[in-house]
Structures are given as structure tokens and as C-alpha cells.
Image 1 (tube, helix red, strand yellow):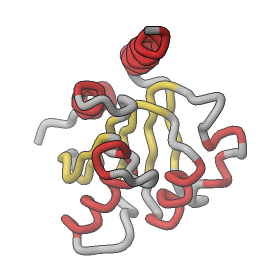
Image 2 (cartoon, rainbow, N blue to C red):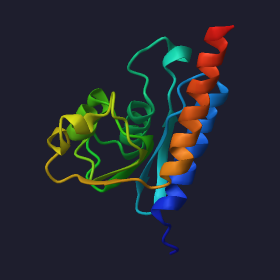
Image 3 (cartoon, one colour):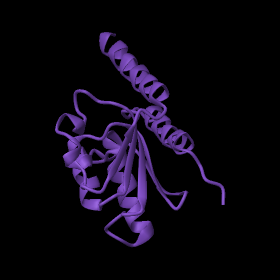
Image 4 (cartoon, rainbow, N blue to C red):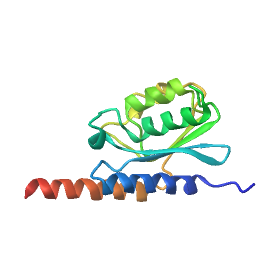
Length: 151
């Protein structure tokens, strides 16, 4: 069986982020991987669903739990293009996910300003994977939003 890299899975999360961008959503995408296979994906759908909890991570976590028919994800990895917010970190904690990998940091809204303790004690954390691609998409989105606001 071929083993894929973190960059490979982050590219899939970036595709989800691009879908969000194309739909006018904040471009955040996520995939959940189990046994080297993508079992769930999601992108921000806050505007579409008119639901402030419809973050990429929540959508992907929910889909993974349904796929596995389990409320826990102890042998899974979440790849997400932006550092999760505290709400999503809480959901990740309760899911007991094994690993979280994020691309771009979020100094304003990310959970790390509260510390890794927001995640389950056994959850491993990696960051900076495909950082430039993840942050470029976000910067492009917000530059366009600001440009529209000026008009």
C-alpha cells in the first residue's frame, strides 16, 4: 500500500478551501484521513447554511464519525488549511482525534493562543504544512472582500 505524505493530504484540504472560496465562503478546507485514506472532507459553509458552526473542521469531523459509525476518531488525522478556532478545537478534543495538521496559523481566532491543552492529551499537533499555499488563498479572499467593501 502506498503511503501518502502530509503535503498530499493538505493538497486535498486546499481543494476544499478553494471550493469554499469559489462559493464566497472564508476559504478553509479540511479532510479526515484514516489508514492512509481520506474518509471525510469539508469546507466552510457558514454563509450557505446560515450556521456559524458550519466550519470545515466540524463538517469533516461529523462526516468521518458517520463514515466510521463512531463518536470517536482515535486513529484519524485531520488536515485543515487554517489553525482551528476554539470551537473546532473543542470538537476535536471530544472526538479524541489522534492527530491535527494545519497549514496557516490564525493569531486572531486560532485555538493556540489558549494552548495545545484545548486538544485531547493524546492528540499530536503539526503545523506549517503547505503554509504558503494556505495563507495565500486566505489573503486573496480577504483582499477581495476589502476591495468589494470599498466599492
